[in-house]
Length: 164
Image (tube, rainbow, N blue to C red; front, side, top):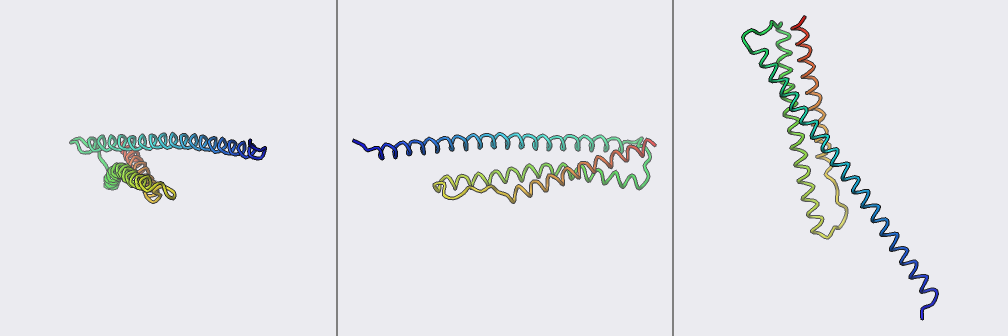
């Protein structure tokens, strides 16, 4: 027969297991929410990159077409210089937007290799996220957006000058 102390120990052990299971389930739910959040953030970033590429490319195409045809409206030398700068900025925004995606792919590849190594080594230690590449990606992405807005702003200014 078992004593009351043994029964209490077994009950405590069962409660500890139930608590551990509940904690693991809560942690899995938190990871699921985090993964969903990460997917949504990535989708927003991809949409933003597509928008920069589409709008910058469209503005560049239309403005080049409008100002390189034979019956081009008159622009002062200063406006021609601004027009060239707007084209440079729009091209830069497109290159930087693509580079931002490229850095993201490299970062994912690096993390995937770390993850595989972590799994192969028995999950020892903590699996760390690649932070430096994330900061680089943010920095390049912000510059891409700023150059995009500046290029469009210069085109809008030039359009106002042509009309007036």
